[in-house]
Length: 166
Image 1 (cartoon, rainbow, N blue to C red):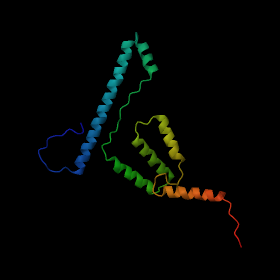
Image 2: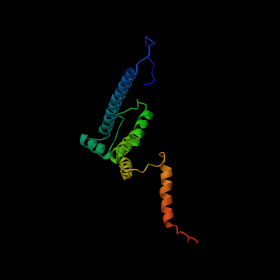
Image 3: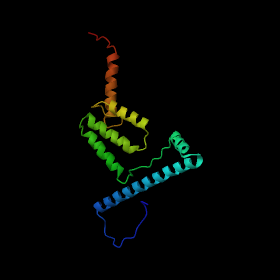
């Protein structure tokens, strides 16, 4: 429905605020549709178990045993996601402290993969919390150079210096 065109009486340009309002309304409409679809599917599952089992108690037990999980997204990316990522990257570059940086990274990870299961989300959260302050992540500007310097210092400690001739 996002690509359905509509007829306008005027060719006047729409303001950014009007476009933002339309995107918000579209997001709310899609969230409402997703919620209704989830309710319908959950009802279909309950009807299936009621139809395939002799008693309501047996149907409820079969439904519980199956651990049916039906989820639809509640947020739809109607904003420019690249713009949001740039804002997060700039926030991290401000160096507002380890806790804030970790919160921003966790928020970015959840937004990039909103369907992450609990186990994976916990692993990602643990990895983010294990990151140290002042150490740029791999791939960040200057991270590779910093990593090379750190490794070089470690290698030089292990090297025996040859005696200097007098």
